[in-house]
Amino acid sequence: MKALFHVSDQHDIERFIPRLPLVPNASIDLPVVWAVDQKHLANYLLPRKCPRVCFHETERSSNRDRERFLGPGGTHHVIAIEAQWLERAVEATLWVYEFAPELFACADPTAGYFVSTAPVSPVSRRRVENPLSELAALGVGLRVMASVVDLASAVASSSRAFSCIRMRNAVG
Image (cartoon, rainbow, N blue to C red):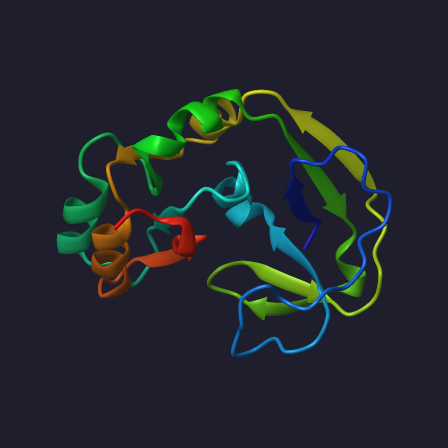
């Protein structure tokens, strides 16, 4: 693994200090620094509190689910957000911090989550002025919906690899 990342709306983080997860997580019950791998970085290129449903193809994805969730257009990765978050997503400025992977252990390979129990200093930081343009450049399809709650349920019972992020902020 070449690098791990953390996305923030804060531009001045010099050192990431382990913290307890805000939401109880069955596999993490101690203070950690969270990071995500390159494959899943796109899932975090949105405002922090924005609820989203992210899904992509895997070798296990069925043709039926491919047609049902991806549709035409050739994208293999989709992020759905709620309409009430679109303006904030358009106006967001984010910072992508890069970490060397040596201090991290994989917590969830499907979601690309990695954790460190030690404080971590980033090796670099870059500003993302237009996250939605970056998603498009990565080939990620963006869907804007009134609510992502039903989609989250549908994707969870499909053959897709998925992440449902910040769903406590979702409408409905």
